[in-house]
Length: 320
Ligand code: AVJ
Image (cartoon, rainbow, N blue to C red; front, side, top):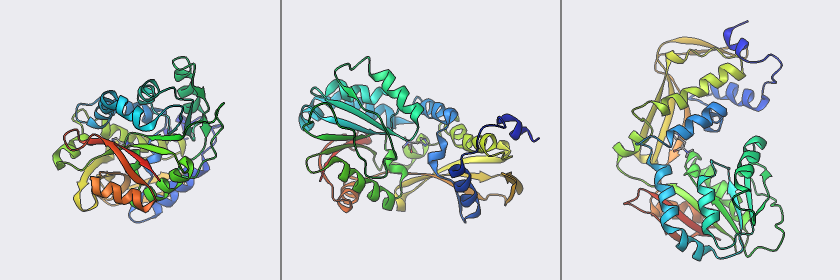
């Protein structure tokens, strides 16, 4: 048995979607694996560590925007809303939102992972006993059938913080925003966190922190494949690379092979040339114009916003 096989309990089932996506992605040119596979338990912990790095301003600035502008956001959104969060995060941003809104009626985190959903609700329920906790196990890139709050809410508010939208290509982002528009309905709103276009050095530093946490986060993807798919990636023979591509207004992260090498995944061999990349993540940055144009393609209009060029990150309120 290989060391990788020994690390996985032999009775742990292999996730067939992960296996299929990885084999397809490694056969494609350029090779590519979706950033959604970063977030196993170790990856989620490493992402939390990234948010504490001095160069990674995104989370810090978004939390500051919520602290500063919550009264204005609450006034724009109104009372008795059903808050629907895409993803369930650490609960820190959600706590700020629920505490600042006027009598929110219900809270629905939307997640594919049941464990993450349970953890999120368990943390928030004691703090917000008057808010109905209605978790939904679903894929938020599709239109959702929301659970019904105990009373009719004034409106639905989708909360999509963290610039997670930036991980989707423009075509995918438009599809996701269009699904969001269906979910919020006629009178609904969406509060979306987006990272803004800025100086290249600031952007690249955020994805290449000096402590190397982002590099570890990226390479953990290979460690995950070793654990879960009986792969034999040598982590010291691959490197994290994150560069800003101004024409596309995005950070592109890839994993680069440092030498010619052969890797096995689930019994199949893959040969890498020296310098050959696996594309793993896009993090799109937006200007006011590019974000408004993206939203418009999905039938959404930007009606309010907090944070701009000085802050480097923005919260935007959308409606149909
Ligand atoms: C919070 C998921 C949007 O793209 O900035 C952080 C993920 N990747 N550092 C981002 C991430 C590398 C992050 N998202």
